[in-house]
Amino acid sequence: LSAQKSWQFELGTRGTAGRRLGWDVSVYDIELWDEIQNVNVQPFPFAPFTIPRFRNIDRSRHTGVEAGADLLLVEDIARRIGLGATSDSLAARASYTWSRFVFVDDPNFGNNDLPGAPRHFVIAELRYQHASGFWFAPGVEVVPHGYFVNSENNARTEAYTLFNVRMGYDYKP
Image (cartoon, rainbow, N blue to C red; front, side, top):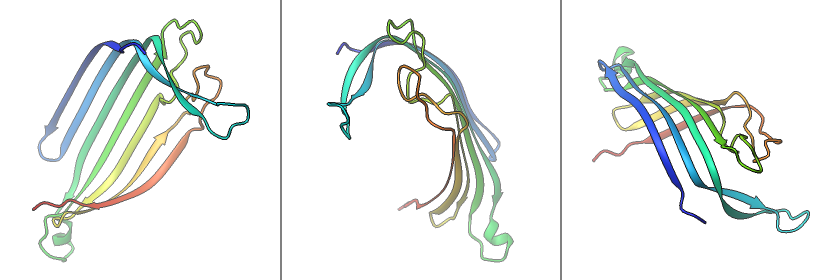
């Protein structure tokens, strides 16, 4: 394999508006030469598994926008409902990614999309954080349009929405 080379342009901003709102936004454009691509190969007909193989892509381009925001909705919830004077909070978090990853004039795949990257990707969660370090966060992940799973661009995933609940404990000695 040849070494992967790239030229990248990225512009972004990160900030807050008071204590309640925070954001991250960036746009980028990456030109790549000899990008390393994983290609799974079936070692014999009807094999129930594949073997990873790697190759260089002559030229490819990754363009995208990433935007995220955190909004503090409520503080001191327990105190407000008479459960003590803890410093808890409820916040909403959301992020959106638009990605366009493509081959550039490839002899086999033209300007097809690179497999494995959805054009649109959204994540959101509502996070409760307790002063003790415990947190609880129901969320959703959305890919509104399926993405290609092969370089020929003749097979794609289905669109999906995934609901989840995460919980944890942040230990702060």
